[in-house]
Image 1 (cartoon, helix red, strand yellow):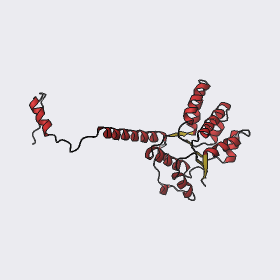
Image 2 (cartoon, helix red, strand yellow):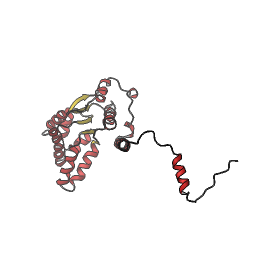
Image 3 (cartoon, helix red, strand yellow):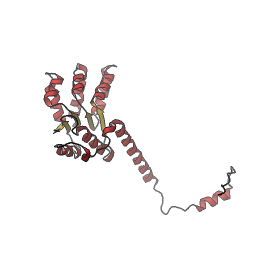
Image 4 (cartoon, rainbow, N blue to C red):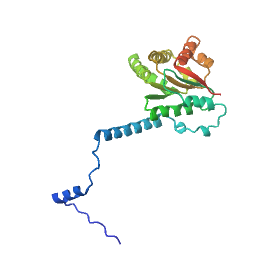
Length: 229
């Protein structure tokens, strides 16, 4: 049986403390406290960015493996998304559901956010319009500030701009503020990444005859189209 070390609450004598400190080997080189602080800060930022990605990316899309995608004919489109480099124009990913649009877009956001440490706003389209509606309830001033903050983000990803979202945004207030959001990004030269299962004709129809063409035109001014089959 191993005897346990006795537990004592006695305060060590000054000479005992000195002996303990003397027994600790001195560092071979001076400690660069500033560099160590910067390293700790970088680690904290990396953890925060990974947490932001996990919080805003649906669990089903957090891991990306192109080999596991049961998709044929879209390899070139997926590679184009994954290889996108930051610039004035983003990407407009169009095509039917379950073709790899959303999965590849989130993989791109993960690289931009976690590896390149860029500022990326990630929104599901229905959440975006719900948040916009919450702002409008308290008056246009709140909506104006929120839209300006969203439009100023260096990279903005809007996922699943679908039929139900397009129809919900037909309300005059929502349509006006969404156009304002797009116009601000165009004016600032900031890219937009969008996934949608709507064709250009469907977006026109969903947004109404009078403003459908301007909506598609703004998307194309902000993003390069990438078609998934």
